[in-house]
Length: 230
Ligand SMILES: *Cc1c(COP(=O)(O)O)cnc(C)c1O
Image 1 (tube, rainbow, N blue to C red):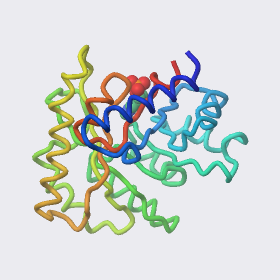
Image 2: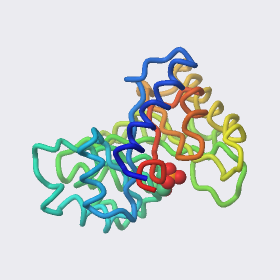
Image 3: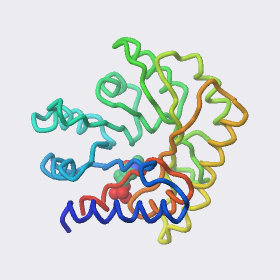
Image 4: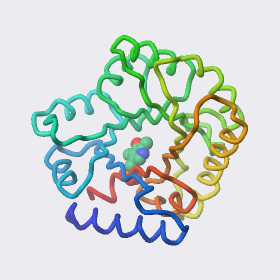
């Protein structure tokens, strides 16, 4: 399937999910997850309106970020780190990413703060929350999120924009709904309690198999790979 048709169809599906749940289609950002995809494919996606690029490995992201075809200033791309980030890669990550979706430990937050300070940047981040009980998933436990936010609130070179989660693999997208709902409720609760100085806005959730359910539950960033490129 051609990337162009895929993107047009996805935009239509995003619009329909927004209508169904009484939301504005412009309130949902489509992040194209370009891991394992070549620059040619990425350029094609950009030609059809993609500006948000998601990667999950630092070296691959650096290669693409600095490739002559994507590094032209007039493209105005926004780069998203959606995968697990190791502390020894943070120095490179803060140089290229506009938003890091996967902050899940104090050590990582401190390192991002330190490396961002070195380049005079305030790094936007999301806190990854483990909304499902699966042992293998990374992320802060929901009941620990508030304390975690307090712990990092003194770090001046990071700014928490919101929360991110990954639902467990499932055959039926409806199975993801409770996890997505849990993330939105957690966001609302933290904001209501004014538990931190941050106003949490962004909710990053939903992938190829479950993005419509995610939008119905309040996602404002969906991260799609296969739906765009396969
Ligand atoms: C790969 C990946 C995606 C995109 O997954 P698809 O199922 O291809 O849409 C989204 N989020 C993260 C964190 C990923 O690693």
